[in-house]
Amino acid sequence: IRPIGIVGYGKYVPERILTNADMEKIVETNDEWIVSRTGIRERHIAAPEQATSDLAYEAAVQALKSAGMTAEDLELIIVATITPDTFFPSTACILQDKLGAKKAAAFDLSAACSGFVYGMATANGMLQTGMYNNALVIGADTLSRITDYTDRNTCVLFGDGAGAVVLGEVSEGRGFLSFDLGAEGSGGSLLKLEAGGSRLPASEETIQDKKHFIYMNGREVFKFAVRVMGTATEEVLRKAGKGKEDIDLFVPHQANIRIIQSAMQRLDLPEEKCVINVDKYANTSAASIPLALVEAAEEGRMKEGDTILLVGFGGGLTWGASVLVW
Ligand code: ACO
Image 1 (cartoon, rainbow, N blue to C red):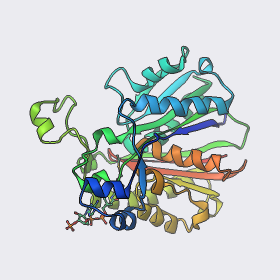
Image 2: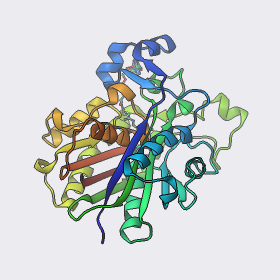
Image 3: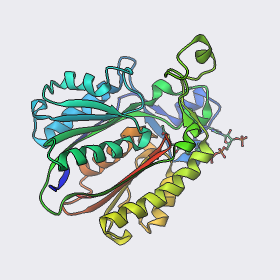
Image 4: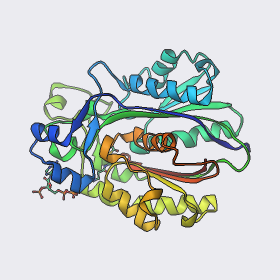
């Protein structure tokens, strides 16, 4: 099997920022509550004319540039998102057209906040077998479009963004060592967007009942997150033949600082080995892990040969973790 790794990366967040002070004007909340419970200080929100493919496009252009590739070279595009521009065509197909990636197969992948890791695992498998030689994997979400800004339990938590990587063949000893993906569909009702699908098509009633917005049982999702961040990181390290002491950089899903801290404790990791940007971007769903990874790369926080642990959890319920050598 040929070793596959990240050969290019890029990210994008919309310009407009909503601070906690702004949130105080929208719902009954306060900066102290939000910061102490979540670690979030601000979030970026898409402009009215921007949809998920627009955010993905900006990140993709950067990623291609950093890989030294043109869109015509691309063979596969996977967009992980739960906020596609439309049900169909897929966001990946819309993006394929925008980029002019004429040769590329393109599809969306739905695994909520775990989507980016699911997407990299999928592409990695297809590249390892030789089915394709390169892939653009993007985590992009515009959660502001499915957020109820009258619900203080959820609206303070989410932001918009996109992160992209180009995967390709790397030298021996580098690239992905292991993945651990999982699902717990029995917990699906804890975090959902109920209407608009084939079960409950859009109607006046679904709009009135706010069923086109995110519903979340925060406390139960919190417990799930703490549990699987622990079990998934142990499992993915075991599969990679690595121990906690081998981790040079930890890139967790950015949902809540307290969930990240509990994972750091379990891994005995000091803060300097952990990427935290939940304060600036809040929870951007599938974009969260690539935004953190790409920001760390841009800041020069990893060097060749470093062992990186990625882990995320989210709606489904799902989780996904990976160990890779940079
Ligand atoms: N401002 C002020 N008060 C608030 C706010 C707010 N924004 N939101 C909730 N409260 C209140 C609640 O009403 C509650 O009041 P009550 O006790 O009078 O009913 C009180 O604060 C405490 O609520 P808790 O649920 O105990 O707060 P908790 O400490 O659990 O924090 C939170 C809530 C931040 C949502 C947390 O549970 C959490 O982060 N859960 C995980 C969420 C997550 O990670 N989701 C990721 C997946 S997202 C995806 O896949 C798209």
